[in-house]
Length: 434
Image (cartoon, rainbow, N blue to C red; front, side, top):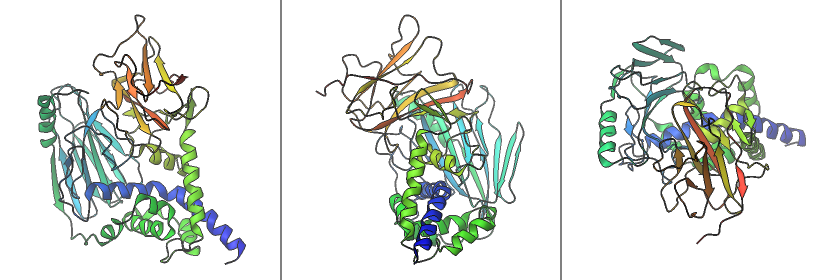
C-alpha cells in the first residue's frame, strides 16, 4: 500500500471513529443490558438489565459494580427496556408516582432523545406512550405520546427518585411503582434470529474502538439496524472505497481509530460552554450535526436527557487548570448563598474515576445532593463540599473521590435556567490517608 493510501486510510478511519463511536457504544450498552448469550440470566440488584422487549428494574441504587454504561446516577432507580420496533408495536402505561420525581426517556441508537415524559402533578397520570417503526414522527398531546422511528431499536429509560438513605420499606414502595409500569407488545411480522448480536457479544468495548476487524464488525451491525437515511452517499462511498467495513479490515486503519478516540477524549474537557473549569452542554441532545460533540457526550455521559429535563455539567480540572487527582490534592467546592444549583426537581454531585464509573470507598457515598442527610450549611446559607480520598474529621459534607484521576458531574433535574455556572473546584493540601 502506498504512503498516500495509508495516510488517506488513517485520516478516514479517524473521522469515521468520531462519527461511529456513539452508535457503536450505544449498541454495546444494548448488548450489556439484554445479554443475548443468556437473556434470562439473573441480574444483580443494581442492574436494570432484561431480555429484549422487556423491562428490567434496578432494585438497588447504582454502585461501583455497575459497568453497563457510563456515569450512572445514584439518585434514582432505573427501569430500562430495549425495544425492537422494527418487528413490534408497543404501548406503555404508568402508575401515579405521587409527589416524587419520575421520568421516562425515549432514546434512539444514535444517542438522541426525541422526548422525555415526566411525572405531572400529584393525582394525574403520565400520558400513554406508543412506540412503533415507520417514518420518523413524534406526536404529543396531554394524554398520549406517539413515537415512530426508522431505527430498529428504542430504549426506554425510567428514573424514579429515592432518598440517599432509603429504608427497606421506602425501596419496596418504589419497587411496587416499577412493577406497575405496563408494557404491551404487539408483534409485527417475524423477527430474525439474533445472530449478529450473538457474534458481537464476545467483543469488548476496547476491541470495538481499537481493533479494525472488531470495529468493522460492530459498525456493520449498527448499519443493519440503523435508520436507512443514516448512511448517506458520501459516507457510504468512503466506507466502501477504503474498505473500512470489509472482513478482513485493513490493519492500517488502527492508527486512525486510535487518533479518533484521542479526539473524542480531548473534546470532553472542552465540551460546549466552559465555565470555571466545568464543561456545560447547554444543548443537551441537540447536537446540530456536530459529530465530535455527539461523540464526546456519548463518551462522558451517554444517553443524557434533553436540557429541559436535566443539565449535566462535567468537571475534570481544578481552578488552576490542572487535572483533578485525589492523589495530589484534596479539593473544595463552595456554592455561595443564593447560588445553589438551580433545579425544580433535585440536584446532585457525583464523583467518578477518569473513565466515568463509580469508585468504591469505605462509606458507600458516591454523591452529595440537596437530599443528603445531615448536610451542613454555613450560617449565611452557603454550602461547602469537601472532596478527598482520605476521610476528614467531619464527614457530613465529604464526598469521597479516588486516590487518582477523577471527574465530577453535577446533575440538575428540571433546571430553572441554563445560564447558571458552577463554581470552581479549589485545590487544597492533601490530607494523609490513615
